[in-house]
Image (cartoon, rainbow, N blue to C red):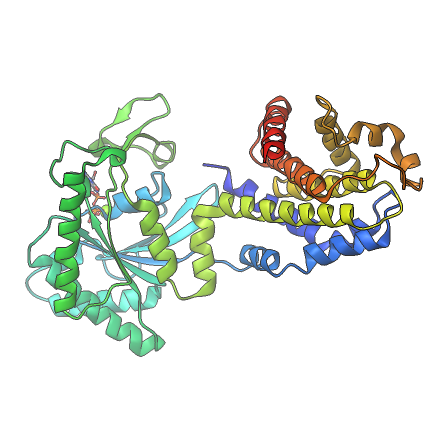
Length: 445
Ligand SMILES: Nc1nc2c(ncn2[C@@H]2O[C@H](COP(=O)(O)OP(=O)(O)OP(=O)(O)O)[C@@H](O)[C@H]2O)c(=O)[nH]1
Ligand SMILES: [Mg+2]
């Protein structure tokens, strides 16, 4: 996974550019008509969707998840599966009773989520059960979860699951009394890889037979929940199956993982990925969480890169639209040159999302290098050669104007190239190849 701290820095960078956009546009060192700079400000800063996306970056905190399930059902494994790394019980802190343990899942210093693990409470028998149960309840309420994750063995038809449901209903009552809101519960039916035929562990090629059986198990639980008047936000069959290897590439037996130091555990990598439906579980958790900041936190924990790309694409589309409009309007200097500036700005913002603060000049050079390749037809080389002399020229002449479609398509292709280069890390040679391909596809359209 991407270095998340860098991603946070990248986002800060972009926000900086976004907040300074007015100034940046006003200070573009070339004579660009006010109509165009105003259009850029209006399109970018006035864009509600973009603002909403940026807002998400500002308001988030790690979600708190209460994980409940019997010993060995796969609570720790499921947390690892969610995070895609060996995180369970990092910085374990005891809160209250020995039945619970809370810890934070961290990646590169960034907290993804906070977990309260009930450590298979329901098995406790004999004396003091009731007080222990009360205690556990209190611990959970004190932890103040955003969502509860109840994990059940997919093929477990024992009464134990009824006890789990009864207990979680009690927790919900207490939670409701305190918060005047329902505690959402997502149920994960774990270990579906063990459903017959159990030899099929590759989640990409579960047979129809296996999938049907999994569905039958899910239906069994849905019915049970109905009967017990227990409403879950979602019931998701999953597999948390992961084999781990160390940095020498040796597979590590699960029993031996506990022998490793915390440092060694952190370096474990996935050697076999048998996870099934984990993305869907993530999504269900995200949807179940009511608190906006926690919901964003859940999204940011796993989809930060996706969010960055979404913003980049959004910016690129806006700049393409502006380019199309510019080509349509009678602006008394070469629209090719104005396009170059718009594309440079597009590139500056996209580069900011990648954490690089580049100047308009650097961005212009990037655009020109792309456009200069193989006679791009957008006239960038010309613009480059003539520089600001061109900008100061009135340019009503033939051949200087280009169609709106070419203008917006060209800007879009440049923006995509910037995304490929700055965000996705392709080198410039590959970026150019992709750029040429995009342009060709665009022409054929
Ligand atoms: N095949 C398969 N094995 C799993 C799955 N999830 C967990 N396991 C295995 O089940 C065993 C117990 O998993 P844990 O994650 O330690 O279970 P736990 O609920 O955290 O157990 P306690 O912390 O003791 O309560 C381990 O050997 C896991 O590898 C799964 O989805 N498929
Ligand atoms: Mg565990």
